[in-house]
Image 1: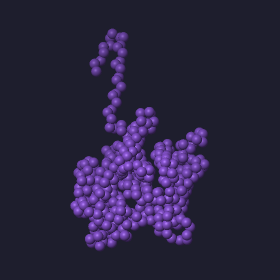
Image 2 (image 1 turned 180 degrees about the horizontal axis):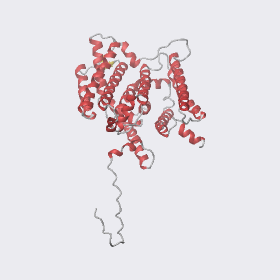
Image 3 (image 1 turned 90 degrees about the vertical axis):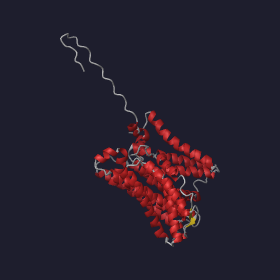
Image 4 (image 1 turned 90 degrees about the horizontal axis):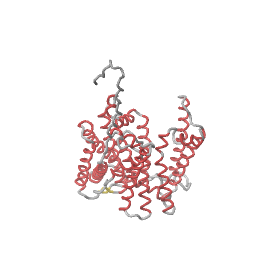
Amino acid sequence: MSRIKELQKNLFGGTTSNARQFGMIFTLVAIVLLFQIWTGGLTLTSGNLIAVVSQYSYILILAIGMLMVIVAGHIDLSVGSVAAFTGIVVAKAMQEHSLPWPVGILLGLLVGALIGAWQGFWVAYVGVPAFIVTLAGMMLFRGGNQYIGNADTVPVPAGFRKIGAGFLPEVGPDTGYNNLTLLLGLAACAGMVWREWRARQTRREMKADVAPLWITVVRLAVMLGVIVFATLRFAGGRIGTSLPISGIILIVLVLAYSYYTRNTIGGRHIYAVGGNARAAELSGVKLKRVNFLVMMNMSVLAALAGMIFVARSAASGPQDGLSWELDAIAAVFIGGAAVSGGLGTISGSIVGGLVMALLNNGLQLEGVGSDMVQIIKGLVLLLAVAFDVYSKRQGRFSIIGSLMGPFRKDEPATPVEPPAPSSDPDKAPVAS
């Protein structure tokens, strides 16, 4: 095998399926380079990257929960309304009852869990489709937001605003960068090196094929280069800014949910239910519990996203959460999730969300109107799915097309030719 073929096979994890998942990363890089040239270098400035993370972190948090919902074969249309409802409840509690802001955050997570339990009960134990349940929830909690808040904005205290508008503080000597961000980037580099080394050791212990060392070195160089570049960008912002607190929350959630979905029994059960619910149930998977927890988890993350948005805006308002569910769903599908469930990754959804975020940001930097921004985002979503369908028709691998088989009519069976008549007159034909 030539070195080029080895690189194609092993660069992104050793399997061709993993390599396909990185196709959207190449799209993301292309979008970044396009807008970097188009905006005269504004896209990759420290201030703009910090603003992107601060402005779109709540959508990426929603994408994490929505990925698990879609993988399980459902859809959640209520996340924007749940986020808005939680935001107004927490803001009112802190304003009218002098609730400390840490307790307010816990209250918001509890509200999200209760809403998720309510919707999960109807989906898992009553059997109402999630589309209908969450459509009802979208109207119910949107009305609840306006009823509790009287369609007014409710400010939140300064301490609470840190989770949405705060940054890592300045500590240590003056290095020209934010030292805590530099340490975080250094830890990420060390973790990446350890992960690659551990993966090679594990494959050796299992007596499995190990990628050539130069492949590992190339892969590490690419990933470390990205981490170092991002670290210097976020650490080099103007004084008082660095990696946003909301970005740290997002990173923690990505790492935790990636581990859960890939390395735990509960995470694999979600994929089993989305792939074939009946077969999973016959294999011992508790179908109702999986569906219940998936819906409840989505509402908890929606509550967290709502609080982060309110904290960044410094107030809760009646227009919070509008169309958030559409952005989250678009991020998941652009990131490679299958329409019929059973396939998708947390990292893919984050990449899909970043594609939408940077596309939106780049168009705004160029002064494109909001109407055209919506049109272009819709076309990007449509083309992302259409390209997958086109690949299927051309005989190439198609994520969505490969899982749409159960929804198509069965191919007609090949007719069996009747046996040739016997030349022996003593043998009469046998009736079917």
